Structure formats: C-alpha cells, structure tokens
Image (tube, one colour):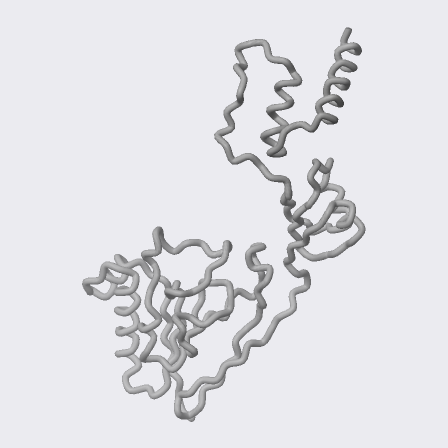
Length: 254
C-alpha cells in the first residue's frame, strides 16, 4: 500500500529542543510538540505516519521500575500531541497499556519484569498491521520468561516445603522471628530476592522511654525493645519467662 513514515521522538529536555530548533519552548509538552511538528514537516504529504516516542503520557500507570524523567510530574505530556499520527508506539512505562485513553497510542511495556511491583503484569510485544487507509490493528503477544517474577506469602514452615527457580519475594506471616530465614529459603528457592515480615513495626520516632545515662533494669530494656519490635506488650507468661531467663544468666555470671 505504499510507504509508511516513522517519526522518532526521543526524550529531550526543553532547553535542548529550544537550542536545536531555535524555538521558544519551556515545558516538556511544548518541546515534544515542537519536535513532532518539525518531523511532520519533513514527512510532507506521507499518507501514513507512525510516531515512536519515549515519554510519560498523562494517565499512564507507572510502576516502581521506571526512573523519573523529571521532578514533580513536569514531564507529563498530553496524548493529543500524537493526533496527526496513525499510530504511536511509546516507551518508558513498563506495563502494556493505552495512553491517554487513545486506542492508537500505546505502551508495549518492558519485555521482562524489573521489580516486584510488576509481578502481576503480562509481558509481551504489540504486533500491529496498518492497511492502505492508515487504519492500525494491534494484537498483544505474550512472552514467557525463563524465570518468572512472583510474590509468595505464607508461614515459614509452609513455604519451606515448596521449591521454585523463579525470582521471588516472600511475605512471612509468622508473628515471631524466624532465624536465618533467607539462607534457609534459598536452599529451596535459589532466586529468592527479598523477604518481608508480616509483623507490625512501630513507626514512632525511635525514642526510648528510659535514660541511658542511668542504671536501667535489663528486663525493662528488653520490654521496651519487644514493644517496638512486636507492637504489643509482654504477656504474663512471656514476662515470667524472661525473668527466669535473666535470673539464670545472672547465676551463670556469678
């Protein structure tokens, strides 16, 4: 059906665009629009046009993996910039998605998962066909990685019964501490990347309720430590146990 013109639109700071094109632009949106207009003039009357852009289009859903292009959202641009094109293939956001509610403006997403915030994303490529009238049809084709990126959750004693070669994040539901959890889990899950504890952590300032310059009962110190670590007080049984344990340690020292 004839030629298709491609407009490569790399990410560029407004100052660089202002210098390169001798145009008065100050925002990322103005810069992208100026670059697009410049390339559209080079294309002339080409009937079918496709933009390839590295940008953060407003309304897109980000993950923890993308490096911010700027601070405070000043890099956000409108999908309307790409209205002159039959299709726009976007890069930057890692999740496959439409951009700005436009069917013909899409992120294909990254080929692999680069953080656990992407664990639920389906990775792949967008295969597109453009007809003689410039209408574009797309199909998402999934890609299966050699090792998945997943999050698992459960009690340590249950998780240690399984095994997997995937890249994993584990959330332990155990209320008490698990000794050497990472090393033990990696015996069954060699690509275990991180462990999160289900235990509630105190979000206070970290200040202690005793004066370290004065003599402090070790049991009081442990009581405060336990409160901050577990976010709850000793039970009577735990209190008695710690008293007995401390007395036994003192007798050994004597």
